[in-house]
Amino acid sequence: MSMTLERIDQCKQILATKKPLTVGEVQQLKEYYRIGLTYTSNALEGNSLTETETKVVIEDGLTVSGKPLRDHLEALGHSSAYDHILTLVGQNNFTESDLLKLHHLFYHRIDGVHAGVYREERIIVTGTDFKFPNPSEVPVLMKEFFEQLIEQRKQLHPVVFAAWVHIRFVTIHPFIDGNGRLARLLMNLVLLQHGYIITLIPPILRYEYIRLVRAGNFGKCEEFYEFIAQCILESYKEYTRLLGLTAP
Image (cartoon, rainbow, N blue to C red):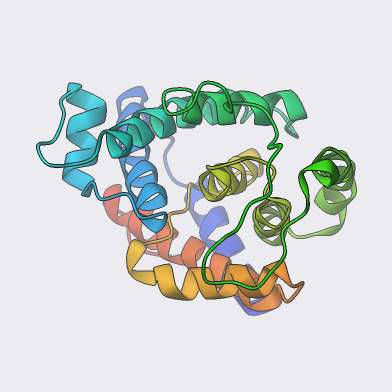
């Protein structure tokens, strides 16, 4: 794990020495990752839109024939939540209000009643025997989560901290739906706040990702941390390719 973290930090340092991006390049990258993160994160949850279809829905406001309405709404909602995390990058943390707003932005088109509020129902997730917290436990666990953020940010390498935020959040599963997508948004917010780049988890790795998330629910997190670190390394390779640079 330490070697992977060293390679990531080398990538970060090398890119920091490159010529600053122009305003146009920054905007292009922003839109590139809007589509890429929205597509990959939704696809991990079973959304049927392709990357091209996701782009059409978000950028052109068009519907895709034969695709469920919910899939369109998830794309639009994720795009709105993505915009919001970019406004939080300059902070050194995120608050409960930020989290509730993110969920509302993502979910209000789908279910206005449950958007931006913690669940009051038990949830059953297929494919795992992990028992998620009862609704009555969620407020207390989320209070502890936000208290732990401060210490964990100080103690952990930023990459590990970002992965910890992801796995701890989905283990609590505070919302009726959208927990995985919010976990990945929060993970990327943490990375951006520490000067790293947006990281995508390719849908082709869905089985491995879900397997490691399930292990993490039971407290076995080391493989998940390594998995996320490897995804970050791959994202640096893609980032340098986009800018026409030699991969670190």
